[in-house]
Image (cartoon, helix red, strand yellow):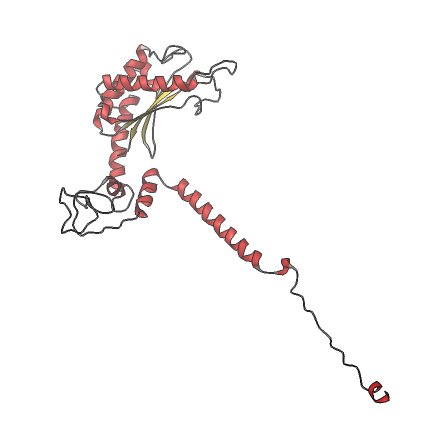
Length: 278
């Protein structure tokens, strides 16, 4: 018994090491970096959308559009397979010229070499638009605009094209009150614009705008009336000699884009005729 009592006891000490709390890890840094990168890409996208024109954005989109030709010879189609079928050129039917640089399809033709309009094309269009502006403002040598008509015309050149704005005044409306029946003055204005627009081949867009109506109305007619007036302008342009195929769009904007600070001012009753860039 004495021999056994002299043996020292064996003590085993187990040390448990902790890994630290979860918030001391580095996973959140990776997530935060991804978030910052995504936000930077988002703001870059917003900046590009604001800094480019519609034609430039079309060119960028066409640049990244996929193109997977499966044959060296086109069979007349203009899609990814370059023909009427997806087979090889030996059995592919040769039914036309296909989509080539000489005969491009619509998307390739809009893209061009750089995807944007050249400086020469834009300068040529601006020169033609300026000439039309001079005729409409009475500055041209052979102006067809009287003093009474010039009071209702405002023009401006934008990236979209030449905007010809015909607006009403407090004492001289363009349409009958609450209707789409044009006044004799508006008929003369539209016919004159139809003659002036023959100097260019641009497509035409028509937008109708009207002033706000009292909110107490049970049925607010702003949408229907603005579109009806725009469509009436289309028929007047066509009767004045403008080719129907040049009409690109007819839109009613109601009272959503006001030209005057007072929503119910007569100045907000207007028609925009846009000669679009080619």
